[in-house]
Image (cartoon, rainbow, N blue to C red; front, side):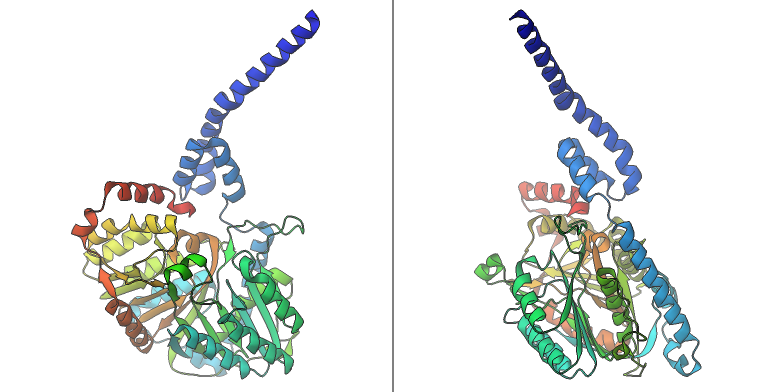
Length: 501
């Protein structure tokens, strides 16, 4: 009996010692380890946010960091991106050496934008092409009907890529058109983000499969099928390419304008978007981005030698200069962020930014402040109602800094969620694509951006900007400073974790 008592006492001492280590010493050790490891891995970009999380919640913070800490895709997918970059670069070099296509590589733009053009070509690997045309479609259902109409006119192939794609009243316009195209012998391929479309997958996939449309999930996540990607790294691109002659991109998903969310339906909230209908040789750059993602998900290279329907000669559709810039965690740098910063710094007269989510990196915030202080009219157009709690609070925390520098902030009247993602620089450049102005789009999402060096394109976008401004209210610095302390406190806490939202 005494031996048993001694054994129990020994076990209890060990349990108590382990408890002291785990609950006392271990959190301290985890915090010290974080100070060494996290800044080294993050290069101080997001280190402060992760360090705060580990400081307050050591065990949970480290588990989340190990799961989500790296903002890059896995090594295999980065290798696929590099391979496709090399394939595209070889194709571009081949095209540039053809004398009959010299007219497409004769850019005419203000000299002070030459550096921006070179930067974007270096980042995305895609050159500036002439001979393009753009139409902007701000009408939600009108844009989807136009896409369906163009698909109905397809002769050879249709490629569709969406972050969110639902077989609902709106998305079914595109689904039905795809099924009609497939039925008449047009080759159809669809990419849809797995987690971003999780709530709408089954009905969509069932119809596509039954109709013979070839489809794949982008960045699929399944522990049981050994499909492992970081769940917060998503493919956020929106691309439609038809016969290599017509393309669509922008902010809009193929889904109802309420995004089928109970909260938005209950409040009467709906989303406004802008879609670009593109024709000309730059459509083939959208096709190159689609082909890169298709290769990543299937291992199949969509080359014209293996798929004759993809043969698409270059042709002039207008006089606009344009280029496409892909970005995301498969690339070594934040391509879209660098582009946005460079454009703001180059602006001489005015900058207008339209975005649903504004959580800037420090260099972008500084670029906007400097531009305003050197006399450039800088306007930030956002929604007056929020659909994401933490992101909106982080966004609001930047308003005072911007307003003090002279940036004009305008909030579009509810019940609209302004989901468009556009930028205009002077009377020379329009940017339109899938990228928000937040850290998620800069680092964690695969995005696609088109850049138009055209006064005509700017004029078209300015009409849309004016419609937003007419339905908006300016944010006053004096009134903003009078918001309650509790609200400012929440905003500042959200800002501390802005790199992680």
